[in-house]
Amino acid sequence: MAKLLALYKKPADAAAFDSYYFSTHVPLAKAIPGLRSYEVNNGPVGSPMGESPYHLAAVLTFDSGEAIQQAFGSPQGQAAAGDLANFAQAGVELLIFDTKEV
Image 1 (cartoon, helix red, strand yellow):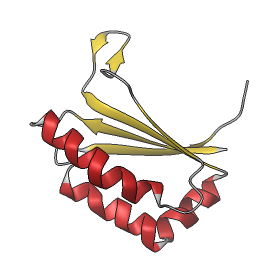
Image 2 (cartoon, rainbow, N blue to C red):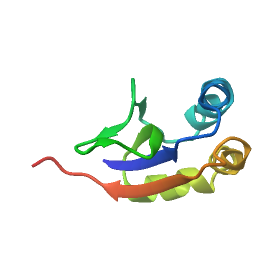
Image 3 (cartoon, helix red, strand yellow):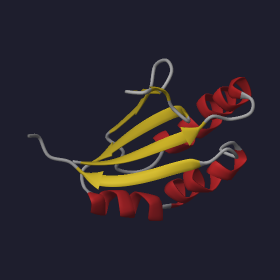
């Protein structure tokens, strides 16, 4: 399996961010081909030291890193990636990695 981790920094207006994210961005992202699961935090994003700079963490699961590359090359993937500019003005970090159980 492979994951895409999106870490969204705290926006100026959290309510507006959440409204747009869940009503517009999530449906776009859920249409990406090859997406196996889509999870987001339920409550604040913290760190071992307390507060974090992040408002929302999203974990998208795919079969492989190659599947992620193919997914984001699709029209649906490009639409979801292009949508980031519409709501993630505070910034977003995108990390892609393969996983294994240990």
